[in-house]
Every structure is written in structure tokens, then in C-alpha cells.
Amino acid sequence: MNTLNDRLAQILAIKDEAECVRSFGTFLKEYAGELPLPGENKQFDKAMWTLSKFTWLSRSDEQILSQVTARMIEQIAEPRSAVLKLKDLVGSTKQAAIDTWQDLLTAMSWQQLVPAGAMRGVGTQMVSLGTIQRVVDDVTIQVNLGWHVDQDHLRLLMQAKGKEQEAMQNVEIRVTELEGGVVFSRRTNEDGAVVAPSVAVKPGQYKIQVLWFDNLIETPFFRV
Image (cartoon, rainbow, N blue to C red; front, side, top):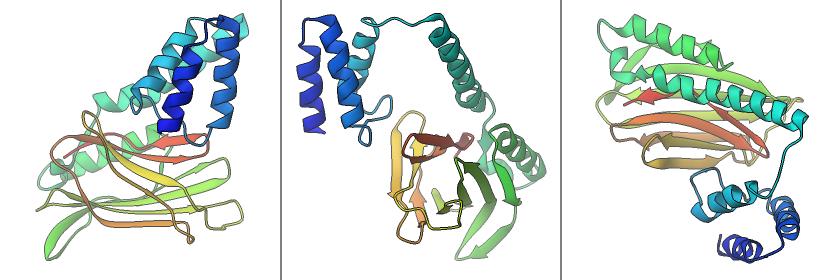
């Protein structure tokens, strides 16, 4: 990260606007696999903002940007207004909570393979959020989620497979809290799997993100 920040500082120090933009474009290609997400690196965010003022968009570029922005707002902002409250999965509100979860998944193109709602008790009670699946660029992502009722913990399992059903390594899964940032991150092993039986989550609003190469897919927000 220090090398990345040092390069950014050198690029931002270039006085010629055209050369500054060209150098930043080269930088993005060189560090394509290491670039931070928005909010993770303040210097990178500053560079993106500063250099955006040195560039201009064609009419077709503006149309594409508008479409992408609208889609991002639809996929990211909307789940914040409709959040699954995990505690609603216990008691008389259970079916309504399950229906809400299903609607949110459908809106974000996740398929529910195993339904939510089953509860079991082995030491601690756990409510299952089921198994969900999404296919992106011939990669199939399956995530199984559970919430430990008596503890602030999630049970999380993920499997990533390619179009020939081969295991996909280095697919990252994150649990991100809206206010506090990333609380859990792990990449798939040689079997294309992540097994996390206990992910600590304090009261707050969360989402799960799956990342590989240029792909980022997210689950709906849920509240602990």
C-alpha cells in the first residue's frame, strides 16, 4: 500500500494536466489487481476526484456513465431503504421477514436455492438464511448464511465454480458494516471454498460482498 501511495503522490505532483492524466491511466493498469474500493484509501479517492477535473467525456461516454450510475444507485441505495432485521426471523414476524429477504434477493438477481427460516439448536440456536446463488461471467457463486440467535455471530459458507464446474481460487468474500467498514474478509482456497463458522458482528447494518478481478456483487443489507 505504501508503494501505491508513493506513486499516487508522484502523479499528483505532475504540473502538466495531460501528462498527469496519462500517468494515472498507466498507474491504474499496473495496479489493477490492488486498487482499493471507494472509502478504503483516502489518497486514492483524492486522486480520482482531482484527476476527474482534468478529463472530459464525450456524449456517448456521458450516456454510459448515466446508465451505470443509475444502475449502481438502484442496486446499492435501494437495499438501504429495505433492510432485513435478523431478529424478525424469530417469532411471529418470521414469515414476513423471510418474504422480505426473498424479495430483496430477487431484486439483486440472487436465486434462493435453499429457503430461509429453518432453526436448529446445537449449543446455540441458529436461524438459516438459506443458500443463495448468482452467476456472473460464467462464474457461479453460492453462499450459505446462518445467524446465531444467542450470539452476535454469522455462519458463512461460500463456493465459487467456473463454467466447467472447476474450483475458482482467490474469490474474496467480505462482510461490511455500513458505518464501520470491512469486519471480515477471506479468499477461496484451492477447493474454491470459504468456510467461516463464526463471524463476529456487533449490532449494526451489514452487507456481504463477493469480489474477483473486476467483478463486485453484493447481497442485500441486513441488520443485527
